[in-house]
Image (cartoon, rainbow, N blue to C red; front, side, top):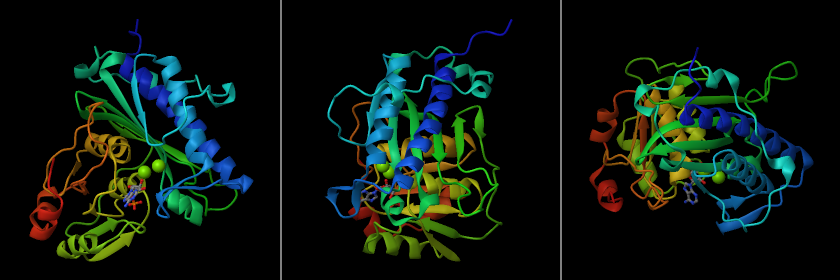
Length: 309
Ligand code: AMP
Ligand code: MG
Ligand code: MG
């Protein structure tokens, strides 16, 4: 008889299901036309009704099924009861049938930290750049991002009626990543993906120092990691403060599950323990291959301006 699923695989299966519910919320709020936008630290740091509802949905759903988890969400919301219709108690059955990697079979709920970005690419969401938007749920153990779910609610939205709208990507270290076709940029081609709405002089100087053949400016950390694993970009370069642990945990886990790498601009790993600083203050450098090349090109002034913790 097959053994029952481990805590980790049950958690990933639940995260997958609640990410799909989140995508419904993200679409519904958009179609309602009532985004109810709040500026957090400024005009480039927004929160919409969708960010708020999705965070409530994910946090309440996961803590109901896994009461001992530590869950850290991006949005600062008042502690109040969550409507029943925001709770998802389903689990993705295909994930429950996969084997848990040996090193994670005995993990306990209380040892796991979940990082939630309810809507990554909010600025782009408010501007109608809908395929930049993702929902991110990352799972960390002993400071390492070990599993992640990325939902892209508007995947295929320009394909017209008949195309299935939205998709979910997920991965676990030691098991692999699913929900997309892994592809690489053709050999030797340097295509850099970077921010479109949070740029500054350091960001552009680091991108130019990579000697790129092409630069793509898109919103969202989740979206940029999808570009890496689908062969649309060879490196994600963001030489600035601004990106937080909830932006990178799920994307890092999926990227690492297929052999890629996400570090700060010095090549140091970020940690995802419950008590870490939220800001990724030494920038983000992510690649599927050739991480060392990109690291070797980071200018000295960038390294000095963005020290590792
Ligand atoms: P971007 O590539 O600009 O879409 O940024 C990726 C993630 O980091 C998004 O969640 C942004 O909101 C966040 N981020 C990056 N820079 C900043 C900033 N200067 N202020 C607030 N959030 C930022
Ligand atoms: Mg984000
Ligand atoms: Mg967000």
